[in-house]
Length: 257
Image (tube, rainbow, N blue to C red; front, top):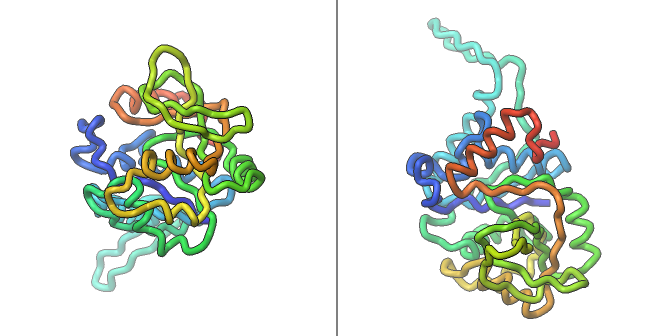
């Protein structure tokens, strides 16, 4: 099953670093947060990724191009018969497709642009700026058991995010405006989607969260998998530093590998 990662936005709220690189390439513990997310999927056996790139997309492509060398010991023989010897190969069993989905394309439009790489298959989708310790296999089984077009992972916390109205049967009935008054369920990403979802995307201007998920909710085709563990996005420098501290402690909750 393919994993689609949204990694094309401008990341303006963390411009201290995103001025120089795409937000998903900002490092936690010396590795891009994108790598942390991919490692999380990989430890469940999901190793094929499609990255929806955009802003400074060449940096993502160059990072994966050089990943093999940068994670191995290498001898460069610079004599007349130039040789490069790779020792102790340390890499991942990943197949990664990086797609330039446009600089200003909205989230739905980015998903539409990678449709040809998905085909007629169920796939998973998440954002390239948040880490989580969700049980991916359990999420997938929940999605299959309910037989709906889409399943998102919800977490309950006090956040300035759009709030979900979730029924007792775990179906998402509607989205509403954010609230800071109480802890409420929000969309943490980590979605499972049927290929029928592409029918709801019209063009580059389609916003996946509003124009697709809200419509699916109104049709009873969106389910919520409730996650009670760790989830943290990285929208600001303060949140990046929080993740750095957790990683440096040796007890990062999202590290399952």
